[in-house]
Image 1 (cartoon, rainbow, N blue to C red):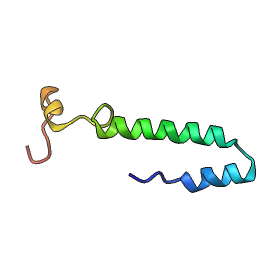
Image 2: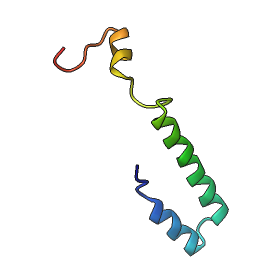
Image 3: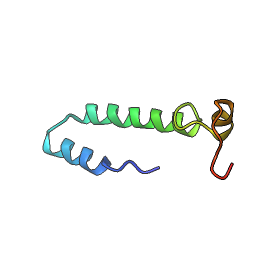
Image 4: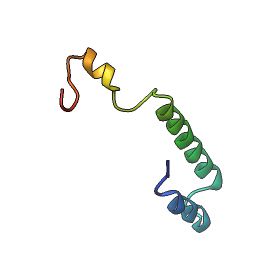
Length: 60
């Protein structure tokens, strides 16, 4: 995964717009969200979950 505005976040720290601590907290939260996505905790339903809900996949 690539965090698209990470460079802007670092620029904001350098310019004094936000503190380094706040930027670190924001990146920690991004890391937690990415971990949840990778582990399937959040994100779109998997095909088997969609079938259980009565939805068919493409071509089905």
